Length: 404
Image (tube, rainbow, N blue to C red; front, side, top):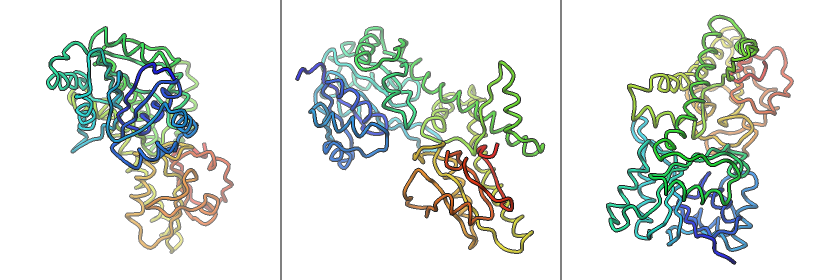
């Protein structure tokens, strides 16, 4: 088997593992690294630890053919990809310690002409910071490495397709680095590869998700105004969108996921005075979840005053968006937790058709929940909910446009 180039993938999570499998299926040796030994053992057995269509087959084939193997430590290679999480510490401060730790782990292995790429979502200037870190430990390699930033742009549930077909923005610390990174990605990506510098590439990733967050905040703010003004927000948006240059998004119960709900803070943390709209959009989208929880509380009180008994409530959906099983940063999950915190011996039915069980919530089948509950709260517009027949005597709170 020809060894085109040996790649080390630092991080085997939602992006690292699919990328490693894609490269390995292109007959390039990939050495995946993860700090979790269970993840390493799972992958070496040809299995996967995350849910993503087609990934199981891609990993199984790559491991069987000998092009993918995992361990908890890196090896010497020609290309090193950093695909680790960048969580938050304190009050929405980005934490690049995982990127730093992954970089430190490969510093002793680096040699002239190697390619080092960060894919992790990062604050502006992170790539240059890591370059400084590398050269402080290995001064003899100064200006002899190729260092670049290239963020992913994939949708959970369609990652294996989008990794190949989506355009990518690739920014090196210099032109040679950009060119080398473009050559690397062009071996397995069919989308266009757009060249820029590292800082612009870092900002581009943050701006894409901040733009979506701001647009969703506009829709969510409209829903708050329409609620007070006694206007159907879904009808309003539908009519406004008949204008040839207007395209308002749909409101929901907040914003979730590990990108749109998180990435704007990377900009706000570093540029608090300048990012007024971006910061405000985050506030609005977070407030919308709180507002939804308050609406449920009020509906329960109204029901009790009217009927002289406590209502039973169905909370429909926990995922961060329709028709997926991913609960990360989910506003629906937050609302369910908030509502249950105020529970006082009432009956609740928690529904999430895309997962079998949950460590905190006892799940109920959606048909059963709708039949038994007095109050039905739609939090996520799952396809199953759109076909439900609901009797007239139920109280319905629709936060995601199921009934529009």
